[in-house]
Amino acid sequence: MSHSALKQGLLCCTQCHKTLPHSYDGRPCPRCGTKVHQRRPHSITYSWALLISAAFALIPAYMLPIMTLKSLGQGAPSTIIGGVIDLIEYDMLGIAFVVLTASVIIPLIKVVGMVILLLTVQRGVVTNLHQKMLMYRFVEWIGRWSMLDIFVVAILAAIVQLGNLASINGEVGATAFGAAVILTMLSATVFDTRLIWDKHLQQLEESQ
Image: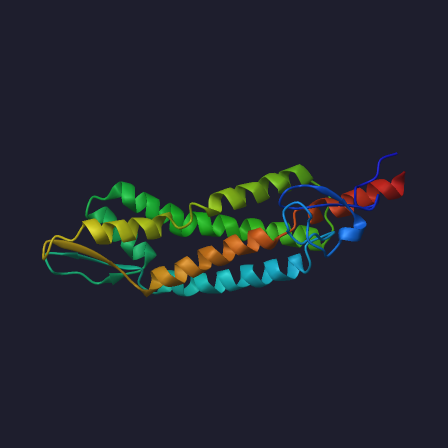
C-alpha cells in the first residue's frame, strides 16, 4: 500500500526539495530559508486574480498603439496588428512574424492554458494528469519568450533612427502588454502544481 508524502506527515521544500517533517509547516526551510507549506496558501485564488488581471491588461495592450513607425518623416501610431501590417509593408517579414507570435499567439496560449489548469483543479478532474503537467511546463517555458516583441521594438527604436528617413518609437500599448506578460508569468509561478495530483492521490488511497 502506497501513501503520499503528505499522508505520511512529510513536507517538501519547493526551492531546494529537502524533505521535512510536518512540524515545519509554515516555518522556514533549514537548508535554504524558504517558508515551507503543505500546499502554497491561496494558490488558486492568487493565480486566478493575476490571470484575470492579465486578461484585462491585454485589452488596452491590443487596442492602444504599441509603436509608431515613421518613414520619410511620415507615420502614425499602430496597434499590435497594425504594427505587424506596417512591418510587412516595409518588407520586415521576420520581425512581423516575431511580433505577431509573441504578442498574440503566445499570450493567448498562456491564458487558455492557465484557465484549463485552474478549472480542472477546482473541479477535481483527475484525467490526463501528465498532460496537465506538460501543459504547465509549456506555459511556464513559453512565458519567457512573451517579451520578445517588446525587446524587438526597443532594439529597433535604438538602431533604426535614421533622421527623417525612418524611426520606430514605443507607445503606451507596449507598457500594457508588458504588464500583461508579467502578470501571466506570476499567475503560473504562484500556481501549486501539486494540486493537480491531490484529488487523484486521494482517490487512490480511498480505494486501497
